[in-house]
Image 1 (cartoon, rainbow, N blue to C red):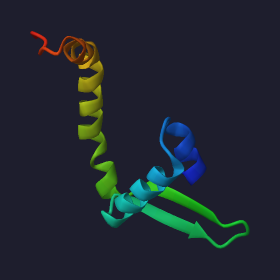
Image 2 (image 1 turned 135 degrees about the vertical axis):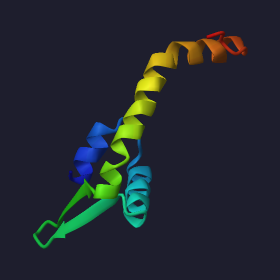
Image 3 (image 1 turned 45 degrees about the vertical axis):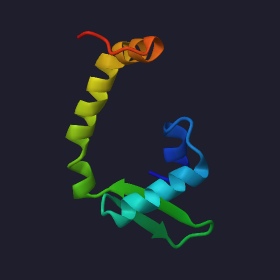
Image 4 (image 1 turned 180 degrees about the vertical axis):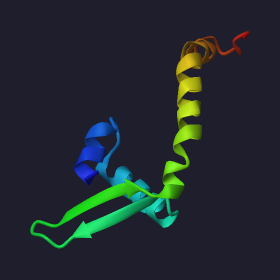
Length: 84
């Protein structure tokens, strides 16, 4: 994906924070950055095999968070842990 596509898909993130995060993911070997020698310069990002290996556990965490969102919100609102 191009940087602008990432920014459009991730709501409420500043350009600076997205840029820092993508750079860090690249340094960690999770994202590959490809620069194309055209004018204007085109840069694309893609997950590396290591990055793709995180999709299953991250999706499991996302599913858990969605399933427990209401209990978490209730706990925050009351200041007490919810009884599950």
